Picture 1 (cartoon, rainbow, N blue to C red):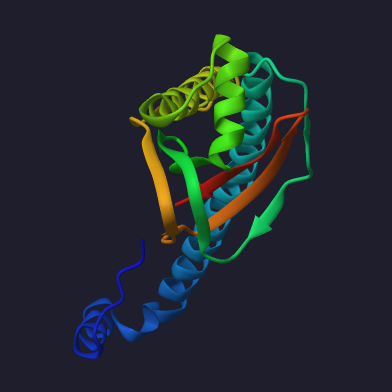
Picture 2: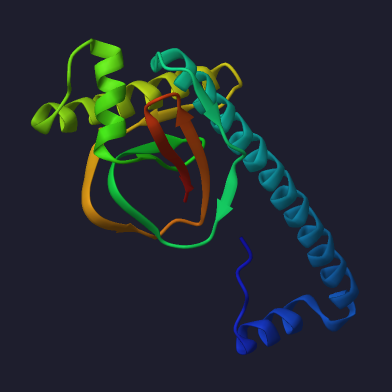
Length: 192
């Protein structure tokens, strides 16, 4: 982090080091800024790797947790508010900060619950199951990516019901999952 000096402090600094030292001071700041840019570049590369591992970990978690054949669409970058009618939100903390959101209609969540537990899932049980589904996928995701050196933790699930808008994220990645004979679910990775 660079702290800039107010004009009067800058003039004081110049007088105290002597005007003949200005070229050395300028060179020092140039080299310092070069190092800052390198650190920033590494952070971007590391963040891209983390996002890739989060997506791959999510795909692996889906295969492990949900016993329904499915197709996963190509990830899309979103730059708008999310509008969700039903879903579950799990916070991600640690090396990567953000949220995992599973969104879809209640019939899709209910059918996944029925496939997993062999009985219809409705009403209060649907909300409870949806939170647990999010918890299982996010927990499996967290376990999968630690193998890649990315440490995360997850928060308790938050159920989203009704006309909900989500904002306040830096970047959002959307992946559509089409479950055979069940329906579609949107998975959002919201990065802070």
